[in-house]
Image (cartoon, rainbow, N blue to C red):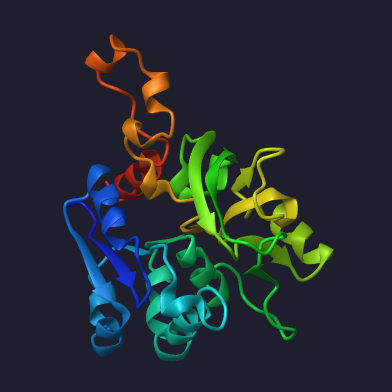
Length: 256
């Protein structure tokens, strides 16, 4: 079977599309296209040709209303059927940081009810932009992207990354459904997210959003302390890949 085609969707303010494309290529993909959302609005057929859709990180539309809100509105209002068809066809959707915000606010991770959205990503508990590395625990049972992954060490960079549910009942329902597949380890929660949630998937495990940036740690030398972790002798050997690479490899290998 041929390798999957990856479509990376960007908007004004997106700034991680090239790194994300490189990460997919490092994970084994040989067909990666970066497309502006306006071009997709003109030609929705571009979505049909892809097997993996990714919305990367950045500050789409300047986060003028709320992080990811305008980008999500464009998808909700102009391409709802195309995205539902893509998801229901068994394809994969990944949202990283701002992309996670877009997925959550466009209803791609759960269905809204008559009271509105059940969860959102809002301002960090301390309402400041934060940029650091965090340790994470992964639950690989329910998520294609996290197959055989138990832990990760990844950078985060956001001001609106706090996962908050509408009610305790909604939180427990999502937790019981196994949607919280990536959590900050105790003491590592940088934003005050409910239940330490750093990423979640939909009911199928094929739609995945996370606040940390896996595309920023696919090579050992991207680790903030790589020179301390590797001695002169070990540098002569092949160094292990960064923790984020597994996520992109799993997505590509899902179709092989």
